[in-house]
Length: 338
Ligand code: TRP
Image 1 (tube, rainbow, N blue to C red):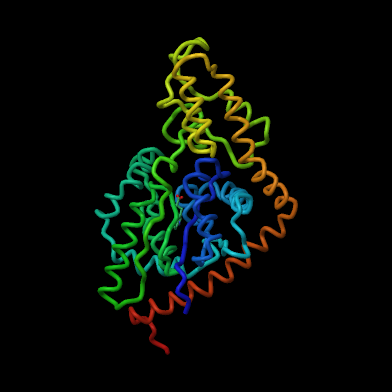
Image 2: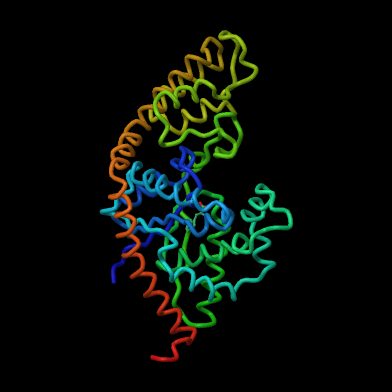
């Protein structure tokens, strides 16, 4: 037994990861991984991605490799963290079957994240049952590894709440087997990055994202197209910093806080043009993203090696998840034949 805390977290492979994922969660994972205080499992949740993409499996297959590259690019290190593929861990599906009995339909209907996703995806009356119940499968993901700590964006808190409820029910009925997890969220104000167009959410479907794989030209074009302050028409006009996406990004990405404060003052006073401030932001972003992109390109040269990393990680994850499943089966009493 180790006293290390255990991390389990993951992403749905439905596309490339962007700088919203980076500030919302990836950065924290790398920090926790490198602290040495945790045993970390990072999961590519392909089964969860299929819950609303059942008719497009090719997208999931392709995105799996993209997400794996993004992980490696930001510094998730297979020597320190176990990277696994959800569909390759059969115990997760079996755990889900046990947990589904501990959750009511009305409780699932109240999950605010699922509720808003159902609206946003325009399912109408045709919500796939797998999608509706994915918080339960996510509880299986987390508990299979006895995770204590789940580094995710704020939108995942309802999943953690539901997981804790399932853990409590299970342990109450069958005995103490499962561990209650806690979320680990980004620092106040740093976790959510708006889209390039000023929309509160950065997402692929809104077409307002900078991807970790974007090349230098693409990043520059995107930055130059960013939403700023519509009332700031002439360079000499006083501008607004509040709600100005360029400054929001600088707050998040520029470590030189004194410089940012100076630029803000100049912008508010009037005399600092949008082009100039965007060029400055471009330099800041390029400095952050260039090493990430280069590492990504390096790993992409050896995709067989990337698959090997996923396979090894999944093998290790299977050992852990199978052990938990055995404890669960024993606790429930479905161990008839010894
Ligand atoms: N629901 C998460 C997302 O959409 C992905 C995910 C699946 C996950 N299983 C998980 C996150 C377990 C944390 C823990 O990003």
